[in-house]
Image 1 (cartoon, rainbow, N blue to C red):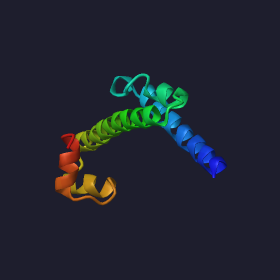
Image 2: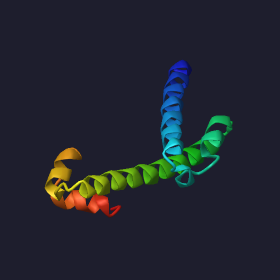
Image 3: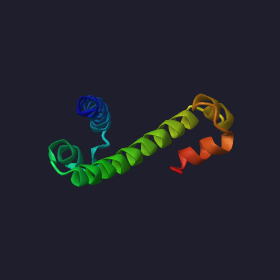
Image 4: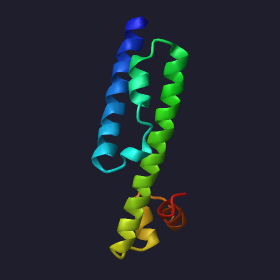
Length: 104
């Protein structure tokens, strides 16, 4: 069981590192809690790791929301309608596409 947990943690850590690297490379570093990944990696106390994970999750969620907004606005600037943008964003409605462009 412990081996399974450690293996799962390695996968989660790898994915988080990739997300953080992407966000840093796209100028969104300020949206991330600076030391959350480090605390997550180094904390021995499971409660501290849980808190760090929550902080990192909130930061990544905000950053991804900002990236979705940027994409929707970029598509709009290209002259696409909200309906077209909705289709391109995975089949959401025109109204939802517009909401995404407003950061909602």
